[in-house]
Amino acid sequence: MKKRILATLFIIIYIFGFIVIATGFANSPGENKLIPVPEPATLLLLGVGMVGLAGFGRKKFKK
Image 1 (cartoon, helix red, strand yellow):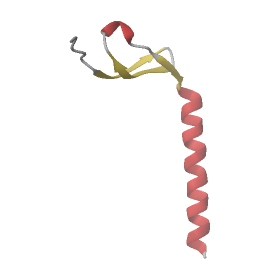
Image 2: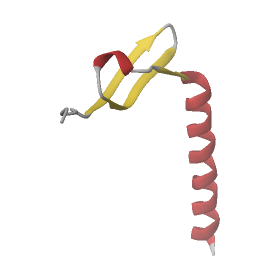
Image 3: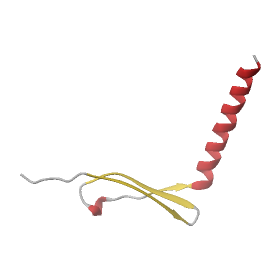
Image 4: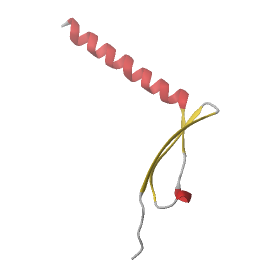
């Protein structure tokens, strides 16, 4: 019976304005896949969400 080693990978690399995050499970080092995440769009979505939560909290606080 062949033993399989399951490795969990978590790598964050900053390249040319993109954050590349590699996460997942791999049976060998050759199976790693990098997923590019555009940083400006991610930060914009985060900012819009935080502004929305702040507005919702302010509305609740005034009541």
